Structures are given as C-alpha cells and as structure tokens.
Amino acid sequence: MAGFSYQSVRVFQERAIWVQHTHTVLNVLEETHSTLRDVVSSARGYALTGSDDYRGSFESGNRQLTSLVRDLRQLLKDNPAQLSDLAELEELLKQRVLLARHTLTSPQEANLPSALQAGKQLSDAIRAQFADMKGSENALLAMRSTETANSASLTIFTVVFGNLLSILILIAVYMRLKREMRNHMAVQQKAQAYAAEIEDLYNNAPCGYHSVDESDRKIVRINDTELNWFGYTREQVVGKMTHADLMTSQCARRYQKELLPQFLRNRTINGIDLDYKRADGSEFSALVNATAILNPETQRLTSRTVMYDISARKMAEREIEILNADLKRQAQHLHSVNKELESFSYSVSHDLRAPLRAISGYAMILEEDYAEKLDDKGREQLQVIRKNVRKMDELINDLLKLAKSNTGELMLERFPMMDLVRQVISGLQAENPKVEFVINGLDDAPANRGLLAQVWENLISNAVKFSGKNEHPQVRIWASANAEEIVYCVHDNGVGFDMRYAHKLFGTFQRLHRQEDYAGTGVGLALVQRIVIRHAGRVWADSKPNEGASFYFSLPKKGVAPSAVLR
Image (tube, rainbow, N blue to C red; front, top):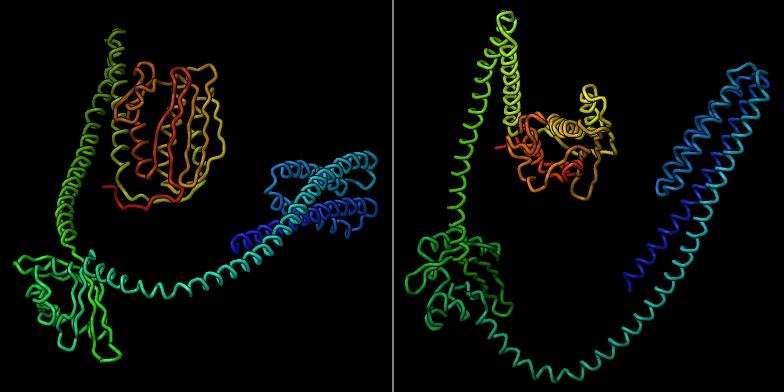
C-alpha cells in the first residue's frame, strides 16, 4: 500500500507538471503573438516617423520573436501535431517580419497601401494559426486538468485506504500475538525436539564443522561430516588432536607460523585454502573460514571453523590451467600463422605488380609502335591483354585492402554518418547520373571513419552496379535503432539474387553473376564483412531475383573497445 500510495503521488506530481507545462506553452504563445504585434508596430512607426527608436525596437523585437519560437519548439517537442502547426506558424512569422523589414528599407510612402493589405492578410493568417494552437493547448489543458483532479482523488483514496488497512493489520497482529502467547508453552515442549534436529543438521551438514579451545589448541567438538572426510572416530579426535594435526606437514608449518598468529590477533580468517591428510594418508584440499569467540563465563577463547571440500574445484582449476596453457600455445601459433599469411599476402600482392606493369607496358608499346604491322585481330588481342592486366591490378588492390582491414589500430570516433554517406555518393553520382539516391535519417555510431567509408563505398557501388540496367535505377539508404545497436541498410531495385546462394555473398572471390554481365573481383563484400565484424557488428542480405536487394550491417551503439591490432 505504501508503494502504491507513493506511485499515486508521483503520478499526481507528474500530471501537475504537465498542466503547468501547458500553461507555459499558452503563455509563450501569447507572448510570441504580442511580440509580433510589437515588431509590426515598430516597423509601421518607423515608416511613418523615420525615428531610429522604432528601428531599434523592431530589431530587438525580432530577436525576441526568434527566441520565443525556439522556446516553443522546445516546449512542444512532445507534441508532433503542434510541432507541425508551429512550423507553419514560423513560416508565416518569417513572411510577416520580412514584409515589416521591407517597410523599414523602402521609402516611407512607397507602396504603403499594398504593404498594409499584404500585412493584414498575413496577420489574419497568423492570428488564425495562433488561435488553432491555443485551442489545441486549451483542449490539452482541460484533459490534463481532469486527469490531475482524478489523480488527486485517487491519491487521497489510496492514503486513506492504506491507513485503514494499516489499522486492520495492527489489530490482526495483536490477535496473532495473543494466540502466540497461548501457544508459548507448546513451543517450549517442542524445543527439545528442535535441539535434536539441529544436532542432526550439525552432524550431517554438507560442510565440516569443528570447535577448538584455543588455550590448549585441542578440538572440543567436530561433526560427523568432517570425521568421515578424515576417516577418524570422534574419540580419536576430540580432546586429543589439534587443528594442525589434521593438516599436511608443510601446511601445518605455514598454519603455525603465519595463519594462527593472524587468527589470534584478528579473531577471524576467511577463504583460506589448506591441505589436509586423511587417516589413510591420502590428501585433500579445503576452504576454511574460522571465527574466535570469548566465553564470557570462562574467559576462554574458543574458535569455530567451517570447512568446504574443494578437491573437485582444485582438480578443475588444474585442468583449466592446462587448457589455458594449451590455448596460449595455440594462440601463439595462430598469431605466427597470421603474421606469415599477412607477410605472404603483401609479398605476393606487391611482387605481382612488377610483372603486371611490364605486361601492360609492352602491350602498350606493341599497340603504339607496331600498330601498322598488326591486323585488327592482333590489336583486339592486345586490348584483351591490357583489360586483363587492369582486372588483375584491381584484384591485387582488393587483396591489399582485405589484408589491411584486419590490421592496425582500431581508432573509434563519433562522426556524422550522413556526411560520410553523402561524400561516397558524390563520387559515384558523377559517373552514374541516372541513379536516384534516396537517404533517410542515419544515426551516428562510434566507428573507424576510414574503414566505414570503405564499407559504404563497397555497398553503395554494388547497389549502383546491379541496378544500372534498370530503366529508373534507385538506391535507398536508411537506418533503424534499438537499445543495443544501429542497423544500416542499402537497398537497390536491380537484378537481385536467389537467397539459396546467400551464403556465398561474403566469401572471398565468390560471385553470383557472370563477369561478362557485372564486373568485379568478388572481394568487396568479404571486405565489408571483415570490417563490420571487427566493429563487433553483423552483416546480412535479403533479396529476390529481379526484385532488388537489401544489404544490412549493424554497429553497436556503445562501440567496441579499441584493440591495438586484431590478431
């Protein structure tokens, strides 16, 4: 009831705040309208008198009007309908102020009647817009006032009902206590049975218990669980053995030298691992917690120790250590392999460029210096050679990009994603003027700007390429967000693909269309996937043949902790 009462008060407070908020909106609307009238009056005064005081009033009022419109926009951000009306009102205000300013800058008597007529029409439209907005706010005020009154009634009812319920509970408690007093004798009779049950719980608990008289270090009490662990009888232990006698020799020395003085000084030890020896000579490990208590009657210090058998945990830890060592060796081996692959990729890519340049150069020499000696078939063959050299060079460049995408420091920053996409589109629009680009709002996410530029360039250029044969090619780009991530989409109305082969999309050198139909190296989407995964994101696609394709990738809202190098 207390929680419900508190919630009712909170709801009442919130609704009262909204009522005050609506009053504030109405006041600002009225003040905005009044300020506009002052601005127009100042312009007319200046037109009639030429006094600079009116000009100053006009400029001051115009600034105040701008500030008030900004305040209204902030106040109405919770009301999309009113924001839309405010946008229309703001446009009318701009036109009215512009007309008034024209009065300031024009000669005093020039076109005054027509200006007054235009001003009257705008003022009427503005007055009607203000009236509509005030009407909406007044309706909202009436609704919120009713809700506030209802909330106040509910709050009062809740508090009163809660107090009555509290009184009833107190009466019930009193009656309960009275019954308990009558049952007190019966409870005392059961105490002996409970004591026996507690003794049984002590002896058969899943952990070991023992008590030590610290004046002579002898164990004075021990439960059956601990006796079973050690393999001793109670007569062999109680009054004859110390706690250290149960430990291994090495652990006993450590206990006597380090732990016991600390225990007697602090009168507590927690979470200490100790090794113990059973009666048959076998060993096991236990986690020990102990507390020392001074007996007020005998003034003797008695310790109470709780033990947990952690032999299984110790064995698991040893296995984990072995696994971790093995994983470390495998990680080191994988790192070495990656470094070798990286060196091989760079070496192959760079070493291939020299013969490619030579082939391209000699083909150009043949084409230029021996053109007269070559027939059409020979020149065509040279063109094929140079075309394949260019294709091989593009493939090498893509391989280098693919190799670089997994190396280097991942520096994250928050930047305008819309600006980056527009920059990529501007480079493609010049070569593809037929393509229509439609961009909706793009949320910003922390990422590496250079790598994300590569992702957008590959996805958008693919969309342009595969929609280029459409009569009206179009590429749409948008984003959606949830609590964890932002999902970006690039959609085209091109040829699409069969989803049965979607698993090949992001593989290196994998293609779903013929090279003769759509050029490419088959590395672009593989590069996209690597960059997105490095940012802890996801990438996928959806399509139907001849119905376009949609490529999605996600980035976490909070970013990913930058790693120096992706191993």
